Length: 109
Image 1 (cartoon, rainbow, N blue to C red):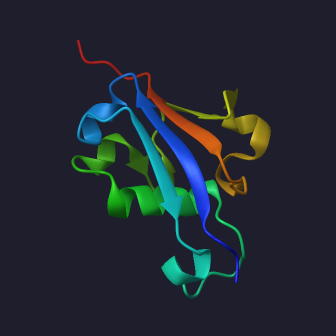
Image 2 (tube, one colour):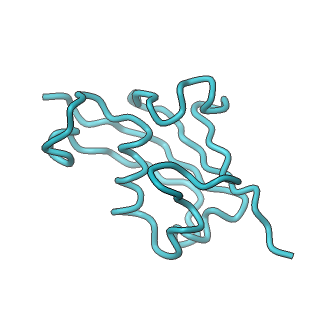
């Protein structure tokens, strides 16, 4: 069974308001099969992480952060300071000590 994964999560640009106004978190994800017993893959990916975030960290208005199984348009996702598009977006397999940053580019007027 795959081991747990330690991550650095960061929320900015207003996204932190959905997470108790906490901008930085150190988390440890459990072994994937403990959290998703029916999962067909062995390593945590961004898609799995978003479900975990929704279940464990997101405090209000999930529609402002998530759309379907991804982040909503207007949320920039960086993996180790690089655009997640360079890593395969939702399918990126998380590595120990990765820094995943979510930055909202949506602003009210």
